[in-house]
Length: 270
Figure: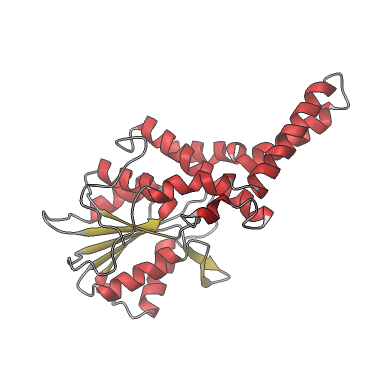
């Protein structure tokens, strides 16, 4: 129920959708006795879209999430026993393996796999759509990707039933039983890392954050008035707000132990 409710509510709650609906409703009301309210709604909707699309607002919304967990040192000599890769970056397009903007989840995971040839790999990702149009999952696409990259099938465990981050953690924990002293890395987008780490901690799977796919620069460039196209700004705003809402919803549902999970002591940055 949580999965379906969250998907349906987000259609309306997404900032871009909400502001467009507000502006359209305002436009309709300007032809009625509620014309004053209509003008307010119309102006608010248009200004909101302009602010999110053309100002640093979207970047500043996503940056605190991306800054939460430091990047790990490339020269860290400690061995890695396992790598968990969250879905959300790979799928199929016209029968071919296709990637979206989060492709570095897969490419960085592949680099880690080659850097730590003894490490186990777990890919977790099924279907995130309310209505499934086929039986293929992200795990099926990931299997092809890793196989074509030369990673042996027996080295990778695929979990293809999860539909959201909570299920990623629950189902992966059911497949993997980390032993005391083992070091596991969790690979996902930097903005998504707080919620992901929180979910894994809640089910007793202690993993070390390996953030990738940054959407902010982490320096003064994030404060530029226009640093991307208008459409990119709106898309980033939707992504950032979705993640903040996700953190609130997951905390209320008891899926994460705290509102904004923090790094465990001892994390080493680059």
